[in-house]
Image 1: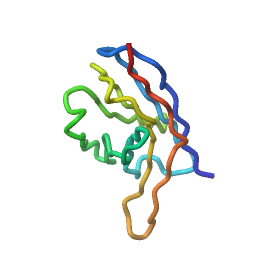
Image 2: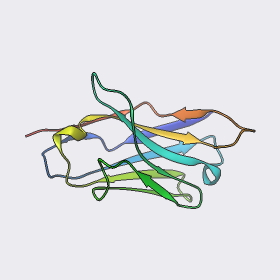
Image 3: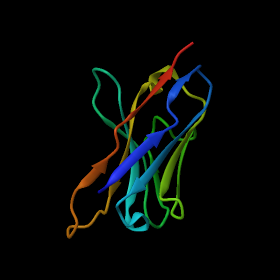
Image 4: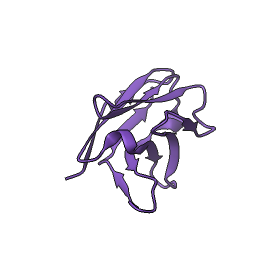
Length: 119
């Protein structure tokens, strides 16, 4: 069974840092594109960052220079290091896994973890 288990969310003051972790099981992790989405109440879901099997990365303009996505294939884990956090970063953050292949369509989603940035 495929599972994406997230951890690391919480409450932090503006300017602070958090590191989100996502542990995957039930997939050939090294072959999957991994990503982080976020959704704030009343707002549309937003793609935050992605990392490919070849470790190519993408970041939304709103987080460039502040967030870093990484992966550890030996641990079947993907991370999101979040620095210089702003109140507008407050959202539920979701981990995703996608084979990115027409032969194996579909995206797996984690349960989401709350990140709150407030003084």
